[in-house]
Image 1 (cartoon, one colour):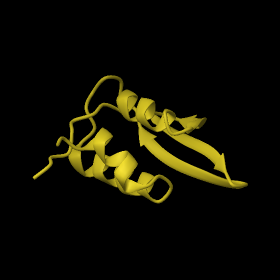
Image 2 (cartoon, rainbow, N blue to C red; image 1 turned 120 degrees about the vertical axis):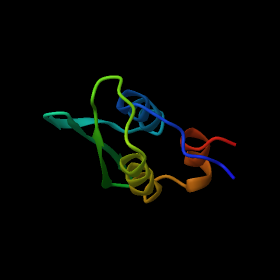
Image 3 (cartoon, helix red, strand yellow; image 1 turned 90 degrees about the horizontal axis):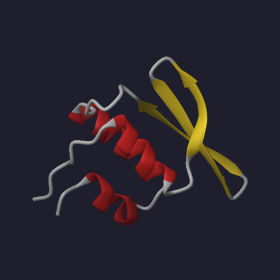
Image 4 (cartoon, rainbow, N blue to C red; image 1 turned 90 degrees about the vertical axis):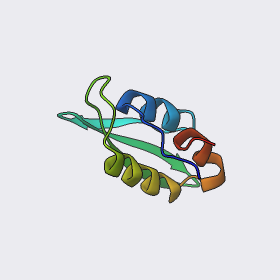
Length: 82
């Protein structure tokens, strides 16, 4: 059974950046990422605490949000081990 990887906020931002998301705004340690696809804004919120790993529940929440905009089969390999 695949396990959720332990990723830092920087790693998550890099992964989502590869799908076209860019930093839209930042408030404190939270970055709002955005991309415009088919004329629609798609936004995600990512906690950025340096190189600390994101807690499992938070990472799963980010993954679920991202799956609304990115096909799960493309995103899964970045967030889960095989």
